[in-house]
Image (cartoon, rainbow, N blue to C red; front, top):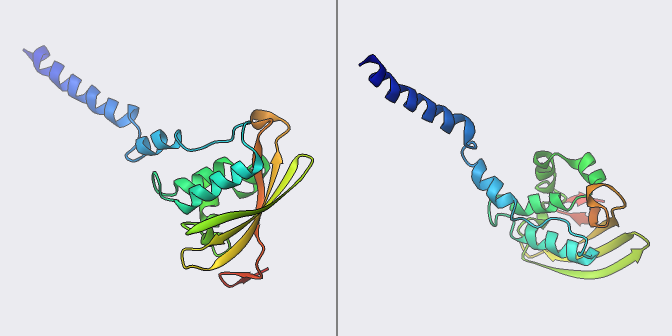
Length: 170
C-alpha cells in the first residue's frame, strides 16, 4: 500500500520538475519560435535589400512581437558592429534612444541613393517619423569576407544626416 501511494506522488513530482526545468521560461517559447522567423543575412541579398528589410522591420517594430524590428536590425549588424553595440538588450536601448528612436515605428521610408565602392556600400534614406517629420540617415554596409557571414552584406554603421534629430546636433 505504501508503494501505491508513493507512485502517484513520484509521478507528480517528476511532472512538476519536467515543467520547471525542461520547458522554456514563460514568454521565451514565443520569443524563440518567432525569432527563428525573423529575416537574417543571406548571400542573395544586395545592400539595398538589407536596408529595406531593416527599415521595414523598424517601421513595424512590434510585429510579430515586441521589438522584433530591432532584433531584425541586430540580425543584420555585422560582427564588428555587434561587438561595439551588443548584446541585443544594449542595442535595443541604443536604438530606442534620442538619435535612432525616430526610426522605430516610422510612417514611411525611401531609399534615396546607393554608392558602392569595392566591398562597401553607402545607402542614404529618407524617413517620415511617427510624428510626421522628414529625417535622413546613411547606412554603411560591408560584404563580409570571412566567418559565418562570408559573402553577406551587413550593416557596419548608421548615422543621421540632418543637422538635428530630435534635438541632437551632429
